[in-house]
Length: 489
Image (cartoon, rainbow, N blue to C red; front, side, top):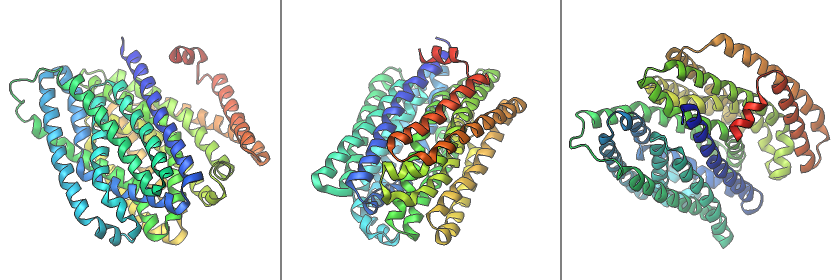
């Protein structure tokens, strides 16, 4: 199987798993927001998860992505080092999880009170369990990516999504409220972690015969490379979660619900981009090691063009139909989320490019540059949130996210260009054509949106936009229907 076929197959597996994960997440989001929890309960749940996601950084410290990078390299050049890499990483993670979990158990009440959310005490009390299972689930998924066995990684992701849906709904229906939904998350991640670690152990660790000696300095390099990854991962998580925490701190749980729901919708829209970035990124490390930068450049440029072709029109359409979509699907209680979602539509395009690019920089050995950029923009995002949330409310958090992420994307693209030498003239022409197609599509959707008065008509308005886009991309030559059929087949 050639490299392109391998990438396509990996993308299909990852996309199917991501579809299961995102569909189950979307269904959970819909059921909880529409039927089982009020905005205050919904906001309290995801505020606590936002805090724990930040705390979880100390239970990983970039080790998962660091070991994935070295697995990707050494499984080709010196497979005997792979078991040593896994042993070092798992041991370090167990120590970190135990330490962070202990601190959280001891200080959970003080943390909740210090952040002005006494209602979050029970969530943070159970947070040690959440951190342990979430951390190991994520580790197994990323490590399997390093082995370039994306089907297994996809299984772990799909199981976590389906498990969260099943157990969260069951526990809420049993009368446990938002805390029950939180324990559903814990059980879902625990099952995924058990499966992921099992696959790593029986499918990979035992398959490789360990070298008699650990390569001199390899464990040090593993830990050293985790430092910029820690900075990047920390900045990335803080960038994504600190706004949720600050909205809760400055406003109220209902505002958290409006902001969180809008972000969850953008996550759902972004699933294909995340799948593609997750799929192609290990190949860049292999191609750089083999001196095949021309191949890496071609794959990246093709992927970036396809991402823009999909997400620029999608973001425009999302902004146009945000009003009827939120009020018809989630109810009038969430009407205040409409301007938030409209602003975050711009974030969809930026994050799609990031999903394609960021992991690729890690595998190209440019984690340091990405870490600096992410750290700087995360600090800027924090400052803008503190400035804008108290003055213009929850929409301010969305504006801060879009503004700072624009800078981060620009830096990422510059670093990729410096590494691969992108054809900027070709990318510029293609981007201009995509924006033109988006403009025509947007006019078509704007003409029919005022007529929308039911879910069926909303689906019809979206279909008008999709059909207009499909016809234009084929007529423009940006998409070859024959190639699409061959990839799907």
